[in-house]
Image (cartoon, rainbow, N blue to C red; front, side):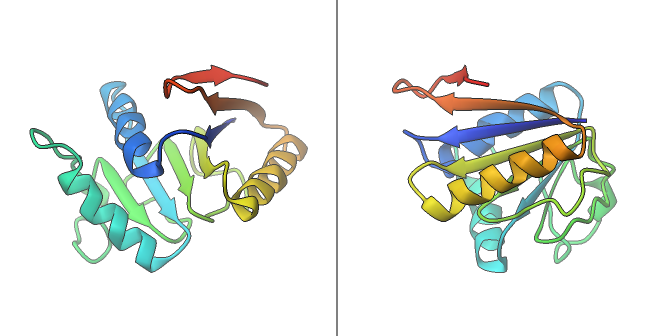
Length: 148
């Protein structure tokens, strides 16, 4: 099991998440995005329809239905109805256990002390569970640099 930590420093989640999801879908994988609250889930749902003038991210939620058919499924729980191999955890979401996906990706705001503390706790939990963990930090240009 691989667990990646993406430390946002210079761009917000709304700018980074679509790119990470596009790369996931380009590999032929499905994804689940688990948010920490219903309010945040609704904001991400809207953002994924409108983040680019010439594109959108195909996705759905339990409210929309057809959960198993969604290439990207948004939730606040640990459900994986679309058989996703990648689980993104954002805005306070955390894994209770590292199962049900091949890859977990934490995306957290480096300017939010609570988000950093949660990421550190999840790093320790992932290591204790025997997962391979990798830490990526955002550079000034917005590129990802592997730090650990």
